[in-house]
Length: 189
Image 1 (cartoon, rainbow, N blue to C red):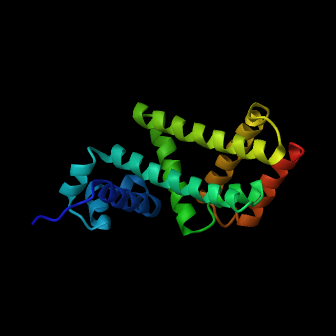
Image 2: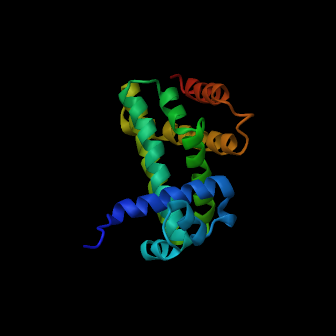
Image 3: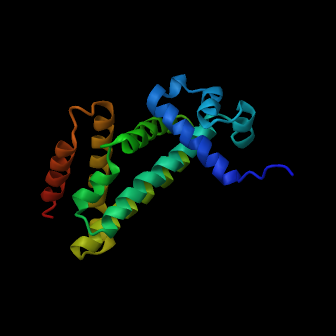
């Protein structure tokens, strides 16, 4: 009897391999053959599940976006501060640095590809909504009252994430925390 392969599981494994390759080697060095080797599958298996490199990059983005959002939401469920919840999504360990490396590549490629740009908008809109909701709940305000503040917070998180993923030694968690705290303090929070 032939081996039954779970399509979603196989795609996730290939996407995880792609995310690791992007983070460690850079997008220019990543090939379908290299992704296959990391995923312990054949190149034919990769091309069976993904039509091209951009589709694999998109799946890797969805993987890291889910990972980042899960850390953020877990911190909120623990009733951590907004600063700590945002820090949970920022680059501070191996997994979160991988996530930011992939996010940076994805945002760059999205500027030249409409399919990736559409997913980029969807992901950033979801982050904006999550931040606005978290701020509204914590501060007893309406969602609309917190939307503009959330845009500033998300833009700050993006800037910190980019800087910390490029130069982690200059952006330790303590500096990330201080900048986030100052931005939230500016809103009187």
